[in-house]
Image (cartoon, rainbow, N blue to C red; front, side, top):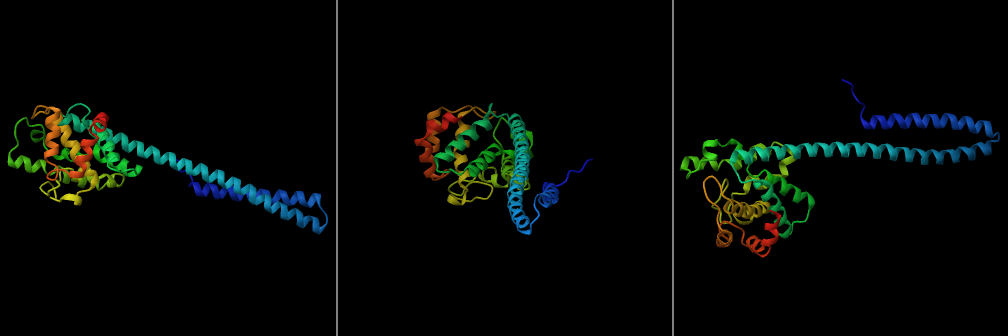
Amino acid sequence: MQIKPLPQIKIVIIYVIAGSLWIYFSDMVIGTLFSSAEAITAAQNIKGWFFIAITGVILFYLINRSFNDLTRANREVVESYEQTMHGWVQVMDLRHKETKNHTERVTAMTVRFAKLAGITDEKELKNIERGAMLHDVGKIGIPDAILIKPGKLNEEEWDQIKLHPIIAHDLLSKIKFLQNSLDIPYCHHEKWDGSGYPRAIKAEEIPLPARIFAIIDVWDALSHARVYKAAWREEMVLEHIAERAGQHFDPALVKIFKENYDQIKEEG
């Protein structure tokens, strides 16, 4: 396997070679063209300024090219992560028997809702997008017999379902690229009044992205048919969310959701 030199080593080698050739040939030219000490000194000064200017341009070109190479390589790594995430999503939706495009729908709606809630930082929005995509990644550790059971879960089965945010946390926290996207997978089943899981945290202890996503997730779950239930009528879904403001949901976010419902829904 061929080992490529590090970019900084290549830059130093090129700089040393270019500088050495410049000094050698420029001294030869000056010695040929000038004979007096004054003229040689003046020419050497001019040569020095030219050297600074030319090597500055060369260094800028080399460093800029290396920076672009690193940026491209980083972008390719990010794209490979994104493709892997989309693969996970497809597997999860198929396995969980979700409605078509469930994850893409709730992700788009959550990002729109987050913007309406005042989140404008692009990095934070990207973390929210990734967290929404992976909100149920922890269900990979839940048996199919429980995950797609058509009837009501018993207490033991429900206890196992409640483990999926913890499984998600344990899985994603080991991936540096996704550590800032943990809020939704870990906390989207927490409730405003503290009755949620897995940690029973309440109110603003629950990360804002998770509070935003909780509303979207419930809206989507009720609005679409699942193996264990029929779809609810839209007015019933909205009434359910409004009734649970201050219990399940952040009341301020419910207000924003209701006021901007058509915009948010359109994203899905």
